[in-house]
Structures are given as C-alpha cells and as structure tokens.
Amino acid sequence: MEDTKKIPLLKRIWGRKKLLLIIAIALVVGGFLYQRLVILPKSTAVETAKVERGTVTEELVLSGEINADEYAKLTFPTSGEISWVGVKEGETVKKGQALTKLNTTVLNTTFQQARATLRAAEATVENIHDQVKDHTGDETYVQKDTRTTAEAAKDRAYEAYVAAEYNLRNSTLYSPFAGIASYVAHPFSGVNILLSETQVEVINPQTIYFDVTADQDEVIDLFTGQQVNIVLDSITDEVLEGAVDFISYTPKAGESGTVYKIKVKLVKDNYDSKKYRIGMTGDAKFILQEKEGVIYVSPKFVSSDNKGKYLKVGKSSNKVYVEVGVEGEDRVEIKGDIKEGDTVYD
Image 1 (cartoon, rainbow, N blue to C red):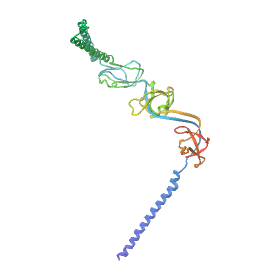
Image 2: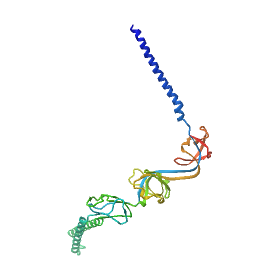
Image 3: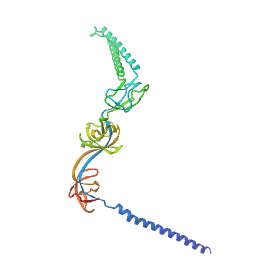
Image 4: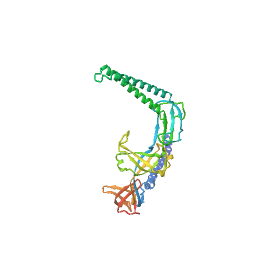
C-alpha cells in the first residue's frame, strides 16, 4: 500500500524536473541565438569612411599654467607691527605707490643705537691707530692684538648699522610696478607680523603668459615664434592664441627629470587680460607641422604588417600599401595609390 501511494508523488516530482529542464534549455538556446543574431553582428560591424582632402596638423600637447612676468610677493625684511595699510585687494596700484607700513618706533631706536655704537667703535680705532702710528716697523704683539680687536669691533658695528638702516628704510612696502594688488594679508593696522610672511601680492595682468615645461625629447621640436593654441581647464570652449616667447637653455631646477621652461606669450588682441588668473591650468598645443590640401584619413583606418602600412580600399579584403606623412590627432596624411573620395574600411 505504501509503494502505490509514492508513485503519484514521484511522477509529480519528475514532471516538475522535466519542466525546469525544458525552461533551462530554452534559456540557453535563446541566449545563444541572441548573441549570434544581435550582439555579434553589432560587434563585428565594419566601419567605413571617405578619403578626404584638407589640412593636416601635427601637434605636441603640453600641460601648464598661467603665470606673469610682473608678479611680486612683497615681504618686510624684519618682524614688527603693521601701523598703516594703504591698499585693498583688487585695487589698481601705480609703480612706486606705498602699500603698507610697519611701526618704526623700535626700528628707529635700533638704528640710532647702531649708529652710536659705530661712532664709538670708530673713535676707539682712531685712538689706537694714533697710539701705534710710530710703531709700524716694531709693533708688538700686544699692540697688534689691541688694534685688531678694535678694528673687528668697528666692522661688527658697521654691519649692525647697515642692517638697522636697511630695516628702517624698508619699513614701507612699495609697488615695484603698475598693476593690481591681488592679495593683502592684513587689511588693517595693529597686527604683529613675521618677516617671512607675504604681506601684499601685486600682478600686472598685461604681462601674463602660459608657462609649460618640455622634456629633452620634446624641446628639440620647439622654437621661438612657434604658433600655440591654449585651452584652459576652466574655459574649455575658448581657444587662446599664443606664440613661443622663450625656451630655457638650462633644465628647470627642482624637477625630477630633465625638463625645460617654455614661455608662451598670449596674443593680446585675442584675450581679456583681467579674465585670467595666476595658476589657471590647461593644455598648450604646439603646431609642429601643418600641410594644406593633402589627402588624409582618420588614424584608425591605417593598419600595418611586415610589408608596411596599408589601407583597406573599396572592400575590407583589398589592401593598398601607402606612405604616411604628417600625423595629427584626428587626421593622417596619406601618400600612394589613393584618391579623394575612395572608401576605406577599418
């Protein structure tokens, strides 16, 4: 009795397994057919293009940033207290204009003390020289030691006097050129500052340029006056025209490799100098070669084998061997049995 009851249950289980097996086979077959009929035709589609005539440009792209010839970070030669500030950030300044000033009370006191010490040292030296003036040929060791000590003290007093006078004279910062005060550390008086702290930055926007570096393999292709197109990372829809103004003869210090400084002057009729800022980054495209009216194709259609470079012309199985001229990013000059309007295959 128990065996006869189990038979319908086994049939039901086997029926379910058959159904699952059929579904699994259908999924596998469907996936195979989809891959053969849909995915593979797309992936193996042959791309074509027409051979064209026009201008081909070979470029060298180097990254860099905006800098300026007249750009100064001004600091005081000594620490002290700000007593006066005569400029605000963003204001236009004239060459020689006073920008900010230190309190000179302590500086003037130090200068007066240094001057008095120098006068005393000079008097001491004169007195000792007067004492030993008749002993030029028989000066004793004691006399020589006394004279040398006094002269050394005078020298130290003179150096202290020069330093004190320098600090007092430079207690006011002046603009070294006409431009814009782009940074003011302390826009108010009464602040104690350190001598290493930049107080004011001044820039002349009319002297900005694009600063790049080129390694030893790249710099040999560059020359003064060479045309350059610049695209800034912050203004990608605008192309600035420039020209190489300077190429350094010595490697740039502080770099890990052998690289050379390149200055690219912007064409002044092509840009608003107040629109751009120091430190803005971008790419400079140096035009190395340019040919007009030549036959060209996209680089992706040029293939090569042990016989040389070739194009597939007319059909994908027809190889036509060619020579390549100027190679640009999007266009390659083609020389050989190729004419404008021919269809090429990848």
